[in-house]
Amino acid sequence: MKKEICVRGDDKELIEKFLKRISLFRNFNTRSLQCVLGEFKVITVENNEDVVFQDDEGTDLYIVLKGKVKVSLTGLDGNEFILTELKEGDFFGEMSLIDGKSRSANVIALEDTTLGVLPRDMFICTMKENNAIAFDLLEALIQRLRKSNDMIESLAFLDVNERLVKFLIDDARKHRETVKGSHYIARKRTHQEMASHIGVSREAVTKALKALSFRKTVIEEDGYFLISSDAASEFSVDK
Image (tube, rainbow, N blue to C red; front, side, top):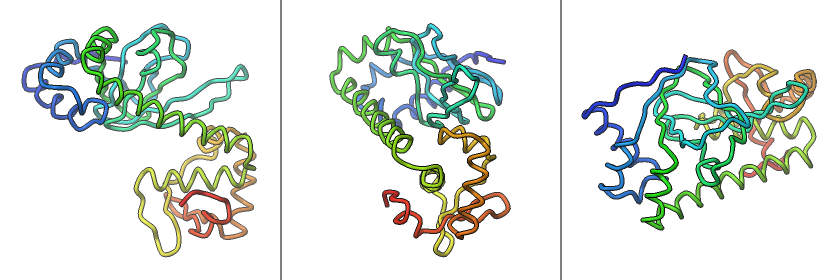
């Protein structure tokens, strides 16, 4: 259940320090940050709770202060396609923030999560006063567009085995997992969860894992996967 937290003076100081560590807020001066904090709300959401729905009205910007969320799309058949996962320091809602239109995706908490909520009007007003902030937001949007293009390329040109290996290696890198011998280490996920990330059925993931396991490309261990470092070259994954 969503719950708004009262933000006191000491809390605002902590939030200000937190925001200064986020690239989107690096060009906010002290006055701008104080204006933002004056409108800043903090909410908590429980694990598996919906934060926003696709096509919902709403233009606030959300910052993950603690916890983790997933951003996904739901097809007419009810199947879920996971676009990305966001952790502490990440933000979402920037598209609706800019154009004032409805939400483009669902956002669901993956664990108990604390979110900062910033109203659109305040951010747009601050951005108009400081062009550097607009460039920071543009840079963030371009980074996400590049990731979206990479995802589209995978869906268009890679088979299930290639998509799965690419996802596991990217996941290992994203979570800064160490390399064990000649293998990447990625945390273990359910077959359905991996299917939702790469846009295939759970059965297709199960079949692919069997094939990759037979070739020793992917080895299942307790709590994680080991992915051969040679797989990056074999499956054309950027090093």
